[in-house]
Image (cartoon, rainbow, N blue to C red):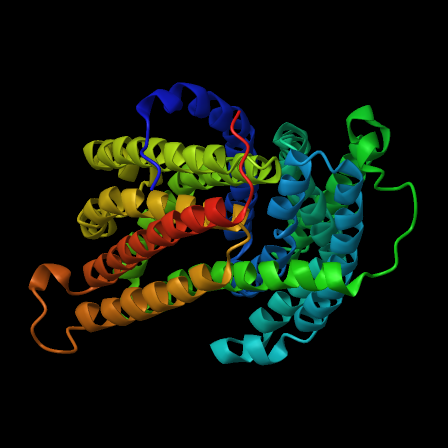
Length: 463
């Protein structure tokens, strides 16, 4: 096994931060979209907010699964970029576009026929109609969203995330006025309530796509890739390669999303106060998660480029540097969250009973950050090696089995021997933390074994 060298951090951390900084800003911009939608719809009506919550949960579950498949382009193109096979990148982008088209058709069919999903909630017909309209509108923007994910994967692969971040920030600047216009009405447009959020999002999605295509068409940096030089019919071998890597990634994203969704549904049984306290901490955790996620995407880019350049030892060095740095950073974040828990709660300004309920959960979110950093970093490193199936299996067993299953046993004291501190919402958060710790250990072991095997089976060039 490669012995980790602290001296490497001086070389690797600046490279990671250079890529992760723009990624983090872009991720936070996208999260702000959801915050604006929720806050502005809540001011319109409770029914519209309920419809938004239902429809967005369905859309996100579908969207992350589909876009996870497309994200397979990033490590594949990253390896080609490291190998300086630039024209091959263009062909991979064209084949990913065909795959995105097929997935778009599938996604639109689900969004336009989501009645059976909406009926599960057994809400009023008015709320269900609003949710259905919301999903139908988003279906119009799905082609742009999927095409944009192809371009985002390309930019991550070739170390140009800043382009995407600039485009996302422009979209964020337009989101507020467009939301006002379509939610509340104006300039001759009638108010639409919650579905107005979807109209604003669709407009921005198409704008994002046109702007990013403009960069790719006219910036000389992209000319060696020859993306638009000629037309390519679907190459089923290349598409199958994308699917073979991307499908497990998509399922992994779906497992992560559904584990938190079901966790919230179970905690909802404990009452409104418990659900509100959980939601505050979960929202905070989502924002913090963007830090290790951004660093992990940057790590995948650098590792895949090193693999493509036949620098196997360097790829492993970058991976362990990222594991070390990201973990230390998230330990510091976790400690800060615990120290400033009262100030953070005051920012949300919840009722006193919700605040009292949420305070113990901060202990879990402090520890949770460390395990989350380890597992997400290891998972993205493995994707750089084009390993995704076994991480998916690990996620299913840990997040669904240990996290949800263990959380259910502890939270509802099913076996009758759960300590009082681990009952209720605490039990679910403890189960989730344990599941991430287990996933982190297994994924890091898989990374070590993969790197060792890769060095033995691939020619190595030391630089």
